Image (cartoon, rainbow, N blue to C red):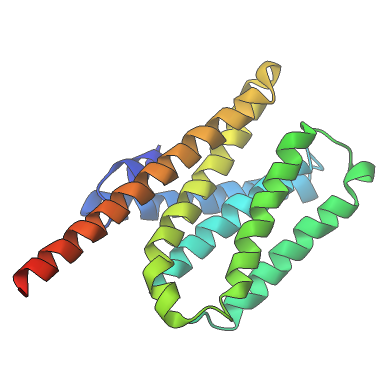
Length: 201
């Protein structure tokens, strides 16, 4: 619920920040219980991939804000390498592990994980001027992706009779939301530029 409050309130506002912080605390608990379920109770190991995706995107989304477009530090490169390596490990051993979920969901989740981690690693080569223009978009994308991953895992587990649609639909809705927010942000930036230009003529 707090995740939906965060994406549904004014970005940067008091309610957005408060609900976002609560969401991070909750997702930490979810990640820990997911890891315990996989490694201690040997439950569905695809939960490991969902945990990696939701946990890493939340972590990286917050790091994007804290870095404010500046170059990442050493830990910001080490963590995505470890996460990406874990995803690759899962991919190589997927046949022996067993396809508990639909292949389209497994591969799309791994693809999303690879996309985010590789982007973070490529920040080493991206100019700071570009990073400073993109860090808010990056935060929106990553935090929404984290919520999407959790919702997809929930709907896929609670509504298994509707797979893979019960897992795909949250992803589609989430990406539509991201696109809408990006469009609104672009319009706001253009408006601010026009106001600035008008005030200097």
